[in-house]
Length: 363
Image (cartoon, rainbow, N blue to C red):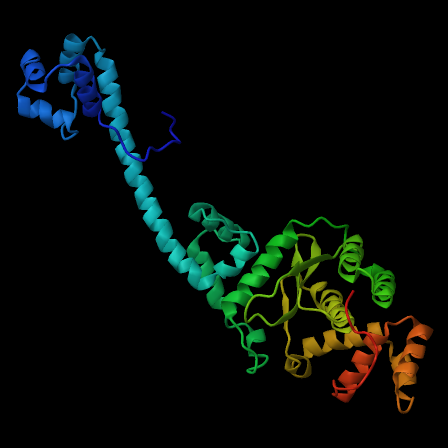
């Protein structure tokens, strides 16, 4: 029997002996008499309650013409199987205890929906360790304890945040980003990247896939993940291996939101991550952070000025009674998607109920 195969049940050699006697039509009491053994002792062997020793195996060899080695090897294998089954059950119980802990710190339900978990608890525990880059369950617990006190959780008390889901979402994004292959990153190529993104946003055709391809060409990984429950994430920027990465939820349905979030995360990459690759930025949906945290204000300003330059905005801001026709005219003049212009106007005026016929849908 292979060392890696553990039977469901260990078979005692006495059961083999019982079947052999039955096939030969030999009664237990007669056989006990033949080998000079007490019937009660033979009965214990046949029921698997007593081991077959070397002396007994020789008696069986003489009586049945079955080598003594067969009986001794079978007895040895039986004892090994018993030990392995016991070990397996201990490990199984241990894994179930691990799983109880894991469910407190890992968004198992959402991971299962994403297809990264199966119904094999051993494989699932191993997968989770890989996703969390943990050598043990204790590592996951300890890392989460540090993570849950992170500053971004204090950005807004209005948001309903499940810290386990947020942490798990970022870990899954990072794990998926590791598997992405992109070109080398060169921060000096930003202006070219900026122009290519502007064209994509202006045309508004297959924006997600085209944005991912352009960013990959410039050495930036882009990951899309479904939004977990109580995980109000706009974007997540971080460094993975030798490349920066951006992860977005699939909640973005508007071209202006998508474009702004992309450039906001690029702001973190070019202004912050490029200087310190050990930090990460989790941007929640709340606008409070941008007004209170300097590093977020910088990323917002980066996004605003690179989507619409200051001189362009000054020109637009000088116009009175802005309407859709003026916005579209300005859009054509500078090849800026009109929904992006309208989004900036709404933000500046803090008025998102402006009536418009401009299509904001992300295509």
